[in-house]
Amino acid sequence: MPKVKTRKSAAKRLRFNAKGKVKRARAFASHLLSDKSPKRKRRLRKLTWVSSADQKQVERLMPYA
Image 1 (tube, rainbow, N blue to C red):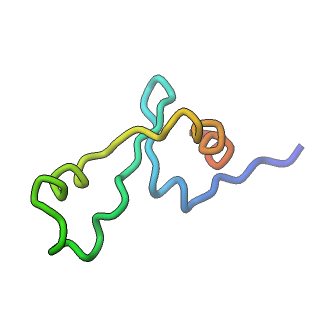
Image 2: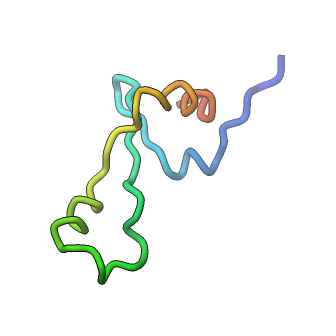
């Protein structure tokens, strides 16, 4: 049976922890920042977890992570 390829785009954006949960960066932090409050921009710098609804899809993208 052939090996399953890892989606490199997902591998560059996502990190797994020891329990198998996935961390990701937040969206909406790249441009139009002058309209956003400093508090909102600080929150956008933090990483967050991938939702449980998307967890299975991420595991398919990165089979060996």
